[in-house]
Length: 282
Image 1 (cartoon, rainbow, N blue to C red):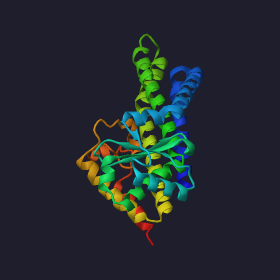
Image 2: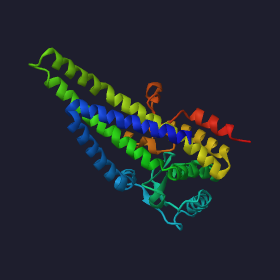
Image 3: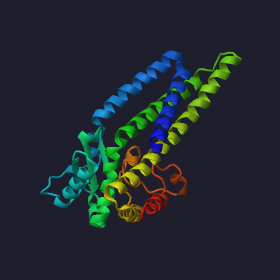
Image 4: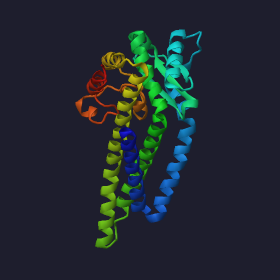
């Protein structure tokens, strides 16, 4: 419940940023237009985001006869989690990773790479897939889509605001110039704040999915062991052509980054995730 409250507050902060920057650019009218644009984008993302991301990574839907072990694990976990069985996809890449997508539990899908099937034991793979079903159960795919869409609108409006501030100052009095300087500062800081809030949402949901997934399998050590292997596997072989806008969907960050980039990672530190999982072992 605490994770849901934090997520709600963070989404409210993102929405507040959207209101502030829309009003700064064009008053009440700008605020209303920003909201309308966000609603339209959210509607499109709600209906089509799963198809887009699956196509982006060339994921192929597989039948029970094509991937019997994978389907058996997903079906058993779906029963334990009291969820409809999601569609099952395989991504043709040696990078070990997995993600879930879909607008709700009735229209969900899980996708795993060929690399993760080769790397993990059955127990570890079960832990990973339970984590992904936990995302579906917790409606994280919808939450992350909304957060990404609002953050995208804020970034777009901030770009407009910078141009307004740069080219709108000339010939104005001191008060008007001060206003446009304020708009320029807001235009620079708002996208940074939106990114930080979006990352906080992603990290909160990852911790919650780890916990929920471990409770589904009753094997927290299995997911902990899987995360160790995945962290090492992705470091050796990051996902080629991975889109940063979809990085938050994967169970571990598919992008290789240095210590500075780790500060802006969509995922919490793997060591901390493992520590929390191991603390659940009784």
